[in-house]
Length: 242
Image (cartoon, rainbow, N blue to C red; front, side, top):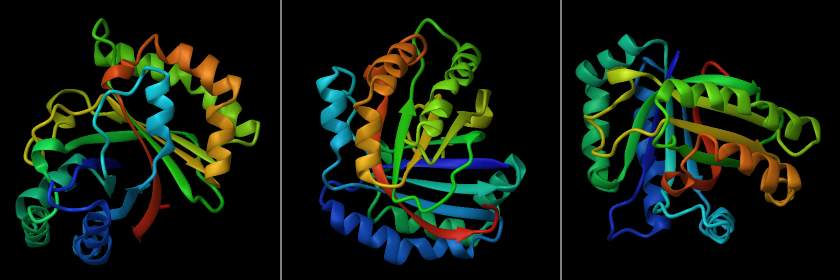
C-alpha cells in the first residue's frame, strides 16, 4: 500500500473558506470516482491554527503554512502510476485543481506508512508535520532516527494524550517524487498525529514530554526551520481499508 500525500496551498485570490468549501463540496467527487483509490481523506487546516504561534515562539517555524493535506491510498506504486497516466477521472481532477490550488507552492510525495499507534475512537483534530531532515543526514539515516523516535509518541498515547500516531516515510529515490503535481522538492516524511480534541492537543504540546524531551530528540534528525506544521480537521471522503 502506498499513500499520495498532497500538501496544498490555495490560489492567492481565494479565501481559506472558499478554498476549503470547493475542495470538500465539489472536488471530493473525483476521489470517490477513481476506482484504484482505496481511501481518500481531506485534512482541512484550522482557520486559527495555534501550532503556528507555538512553533514560532520556539523559533522552529519559518515555512509558509499549507491550507490542507489530501491523502489517497493505492494498492501499489504501479496502481498509482496507472491511475495518473490513464484515468480520465484523474485528468478531470487535475484540471479542476487549476481553479483553486497553487501548484507552484504545493508539495506532493509518495509514502509508505509506519503505524506507531493505530488511530482509534472519535478523532476531531489531526496534527500534520511535514518533515525535512538535517542537511548532514541522508534519507536512510533520517528514517532510522525517526523510527527510533517513535517510542516518545507511544508514551504519549499511554499517558492519554494521543489517540493515534503514524509515520509516513517518503519512498526512496525517484519513486517518492510526484513531479507531475508540484514543483517543490518532496518532504522526507509526514507525521499524522490524532487527537480527540484541541484541548488534548494543547495538553500534550505544553507537557515536558513534547516541549522538552520530544523536541530535543527531534533536533538530532529534523531541520525544524524547513519543516511545516498544521492543525487540521479530517474529512473522510472514501474509506475502504481503515
